[in-house]
Length: 445
Image (cartoon, rainbow, N blue to C red):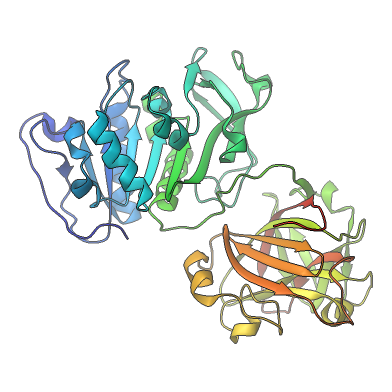
């Protein structure tokens, strides 16, 4: 948590709603926990949905457990004042809204671990400030008329998008951007340009993304032009999830992700290459989630073996449940073959260190402090990256490296094997989504 002290500032009249002129921020009464500053100054076009956006963020703060201050005074951007906040929300700001000293203060705030949330016209802001352009991820170019479009949800583990279906139909003003942020940021959702008119990004049109940026966190969503957006339940959940991630109340992997192909994408057809070994099973739900039952068994990918790769997948537990991801094992209808000849990356909240979440089961514990900081609790999604190159196996949890293991057992080899998802037993229910892989050179970092 960034906030150290809480100072309540007040001003009179209409400025209580739109932001103080004579003081840096309008403060709610909460004095403990996380605190967010909503900044809505405009130096160019002004969106008439800003009051609705302010009201929505305040309501989300009430339900989400964080306090919300509001301002349109750039004087709030001092190092001392910004240290009070866990995130700063740029709500449809436009034009040049900060002077050089205020920009330097905000840069320092991000470098010290602060967070940025950009909503809609936040991308139409500070075109001559390179730091801000990188933080926001992309600048606004133009937009067609307000209309319905289909949003393709690319990441369903991030708290901003985990509650959404794979496609999301909604009405808004859909921005075209001057550049594509995909190489620099982690794209959460993109527009299907065939579903509406006026998209100009050649079929790859990110509309929401996140990134770790120069020491801080940054989340941006292109939605939020219309007043109706801020009463739309799905958009409010999307916005709340982005803020929760920004202030550190939820964890996610926001590293850029490119070049992966799906092994399981949530459809029944994508299970064609998988086989169940041993008792128990996995159930596929309509939302594309696989959930384990019974066991001890293993759902393994039989179509191909792998030797050097990055494997990513999303998982969550219902409670104190047991499962794992197996790598480096030979093909077999016996799940114990994977146990005896491969390696398991464990999922289990309460076992001993070498047999708990993030461990190479029975061989090497995860870095427990890093693991604990990166881990989302039961009921929330987590993302593993399991990277195998040669006999080296590394594990990232929600973007944080928590294990680095090298195989020295002559009876096992990571250089050629299969991958699988464990169903551990009758009392264990662990869910998986979006298993994807990228093959890598044998040697690398």
